[in-house]
Length: 109
Image 1 (cartoon, helix red, strand yellow):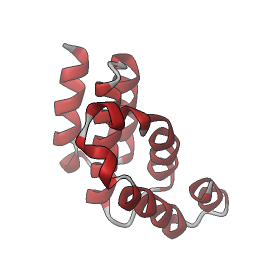
Image 2: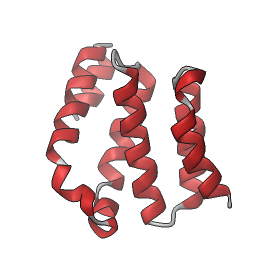
Image 3: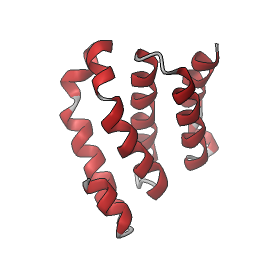
């Protein structure tokens, strides 16, 4: 909800701060596909807001998008993964697309 509020008042820094808090909090959940699947729903909302507002650190934005794509892959949510990759492509510079393409090709296979 902090990220949505940041988007509402057009404060990119608040959105990014909320995203970093989540990133720091989920470290223990990243080791297993089962626990990563639990992160899908909270990550989807956060990444949607982050991609809408933008991020001062585009590499962090790429990493967060890749984490969401990893979670979607763990849940075998292929169509959602393709849509998420397409949304990420729109919000990031072309030079940052390579890691996202790797996930998208997996989802399309």
